[in-house]
Image (cartoon, helix red, strand yellow):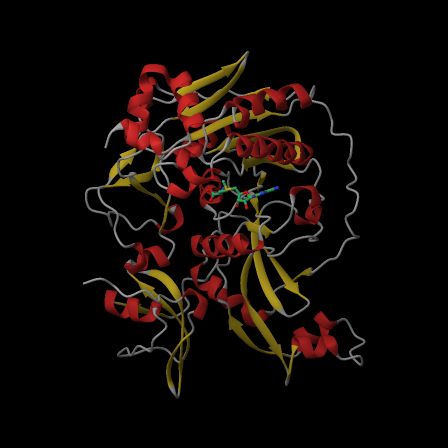
Length: 490
Ligand code: SAM
């Protein structure tokens, strides 16, 4: 396809700008936009499936990333549903190199992914955190938050708190050692994969995105601890959304730029403004899409944000109470892990969550949090459900004390099956590929033998969800919203 035709479907003002910045490389840039985007995956270090992709090749800046030589139908790969890997654009995995270069591994940290859905970068952050660390993964958009929730649950890390907040509503001023701002942007770097991004582009939208990014960055700076590190990234090329934002942050808050060693053989483009540095990926120079990334540090000289009290936030609303795990549940959970000690949290609806971290979680006050860790299940007490007990006006005693002594049954939640915190001794049923797909369609399956009660459905040893053996048969507990609906092409 001619460059003129390719460019014709892209706003002429964008074409002009790229010709002026890339000069004689611009034709190569526009012609690569008409080729097929490479497919790549980020492997889950907690669930490494080994060589499950034929002809995969490595991504120079990320040992956990792989290029695939074709795009399989991921829906029909049970390992995809088990969270063994995540389909992720290769350039954005540069974040792995940045974090691996800059985060000391000697003590746990508290990290925030401020713009997290659908969750790919949270997975990269998780793979670089020192043992015992904690990640708060936040997404402001409610429907995108559901996708984030699903992806983080599949990933299985037990050290992630999920929040659904506008950054200005976050009460944790100065708490975080690391903040990732993967900002909403004009999406120029996605013009090859996403033709809608081309249609939506305009100079006005670039400026609109730039203004929104400044608001988000200012909040991120407020939330960053002194000495903390902020990684700013976008999937666009415009200076107004990239290096100018880095300069604005340095000027506004006296943050300093933190360079990262990048070998020339990677063909990453260094962007500079004085002594500030950013890293730009162009699809005609690297095997990946457009991406920008820069690192800033809050030093002692950085200006301390004026407002440590956020106006407009209602008083603390503790939705969760930290408490000891009822004895009956101990067998369900890994006794210890590299993630730190177990914190059990109970919502006032009787839902139980587990968070594994070496950090003291009381600094988070457990307010404004939607999911304080992995949802592990619900408990039923006596002949009443927990919510009945709490709701009864006669229940004057502390509902948790009362409920614990009356604990009768525990129903595990789907995320527990996929979590690293599940006790591996829990009975399992190994499924072959056809059975796994049947399970993932939420249809009934039959197996030769199973243990009465709850069993983990596994494929190649990796958990897919729960099955329960009752006298009536084997019941499939995959949440309906996660079932495969699509038909496989023969
Ligand atoms: N980090 C994600 C990943 O790797 O999967 C992609 C994030 S996407 C580029 C930007 C996200 O910012 C979107 O999910 C969007 O809903 C969210 N967002 C939009 N406006 C925002 C705002 N004012 N504050 C915080 N996040 C916002």
